[in-house]
Image 1: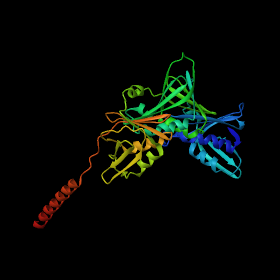
Image 2: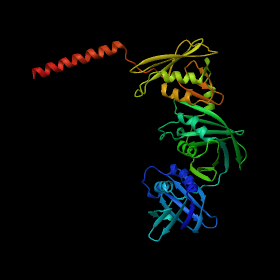
Image 3: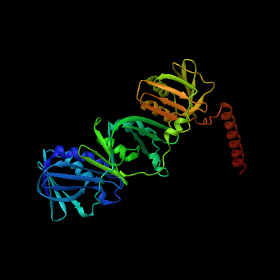
Image 4: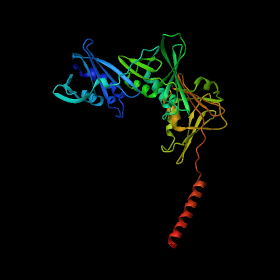
Length: 396
């Protein structure tokens, strides 16, 4: 193989592949990028993959000799980025090495045989949906994904319910869940019916990291995999077929009895003003509604702080409920819109709505906070124990 190409064009393509490379190096072949040079099409196709995610992209090249090889992906990306020349030459030599040259710089790297590389298939899709601004969709939902989802893989996915050229994206960590509606274009080879797609978080985050903000993404659905395509980039991941809760059924049982309207920025600033120990996962927010304000109080093992936010159209509630502080702060920060409609049910389920999004969090039990008397008793007990230990030591 011998190819000559523009460094800038190749670098742009390789940077989109680099996040798809596995972080571990358990399988040597997967640490490489497969380069395939086609003399007829005058281009090079580069492929990178991990065990679950695969990505492929092409860029123009003057192909002097067709062929294929596997080069360490991290080294290839670093060298192409650091080369000072405008063009790059890559040619393989019989000793299973490859020579990279740009300007006055020349590097020789070891390669792996292309035949040993597990090339992805990228199956033909039976149905496709096209989503614009996919990175925004991921930003609006990723905060509510379950972090450790090995036992419940569906909750590490973004659920897309597609019907009537509209998709509702849902994520949940089983303490709360969020939804956002986005317009989509649907093309089906089968008869029209509602589509349900579970996009794994690792694939969604990879795709959103390499797409431009307004770039359209096409998601193809096959029996065993999802195929993503956008401006020459192809990526795929296995289909998740695990069970996911039914958001519409859950929301049917959420009937707020108390409500109010608050400004999103003021709500978020109030949450940020509360002093919370980052090391205390039990910290809760005490949330209550009065006739003209939303009251917030946070009590953890080290501090007690409170504040309030002006509220309009408020229906006061006779008691307060407790919510997970860090999850609530992330939700308010992520919600799109200037005004949030707050709804609270008799059981304490908290529903935050804007024009395009909603977030639901169930009430928690209040964390145990030792009172001053408890702390004093604890101190007396320790003191008595210390005296007994000292007496025994003296007697010995």
